[in-house]
Image (cartoon, rainbow, N blue to C red; front, side):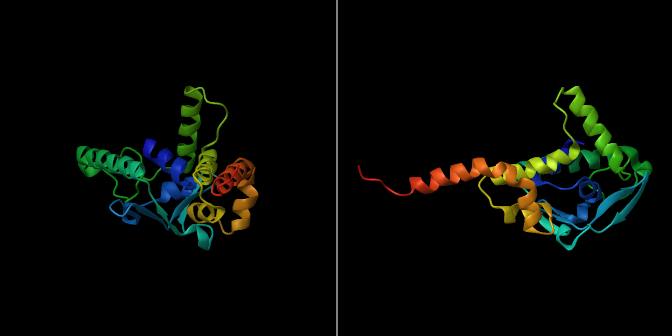
Amino acid sequence: MYALYHLIALRGLRRGEACGLRWSDVDLKAGIVTVRWQITQLGWATDQGQPKSEAGERHVALDSETVKVLRAHRKEQRRKRLALGGDWVESDFVFTKDNGAMLHPAHVTDQFERLARQADLPPVRLHDLRHGAATLILAAGHDLKVVQETLGLSSITIAADTYTSVLPDLARQAAEDAAALIPLRR
């Protein structure tokens, strides 16, 4: 599930959006995924539906490394499909069990927590990867509107309320960058 965690960490998809992503909504040539579906968990039962808000349905641009990761993932998935033959479950999901069947969102979280413990990481939740993606976007010099649109947040206020903790460092750097544009005479 490396490709799934990579996509969440760099592009900020929600767990359910990553689980619900279909190959028909992925354009690796253009470097874009379209978030149209999510798998939600209600107790243990799952439901496939549209994202929770109008802003949740969106196009998410991919960086070249994520495109490479997804291409490698697709190649491996095709290899498994050929190996299983008629036992393969045709689902069109990008991220699946080894037999092509839909991933349960809880399984994705459980495996992430297991991997984090094995790597001896400080306490980190799968959802923290989404927050990390927003922080990376801000640290790269992009504004809150880009964070809002990439993460599919319904308003820029939510982005501001959630991610203002990283803004002081960025504001100091912006002040230095702006001041550097003005030549000073001594």
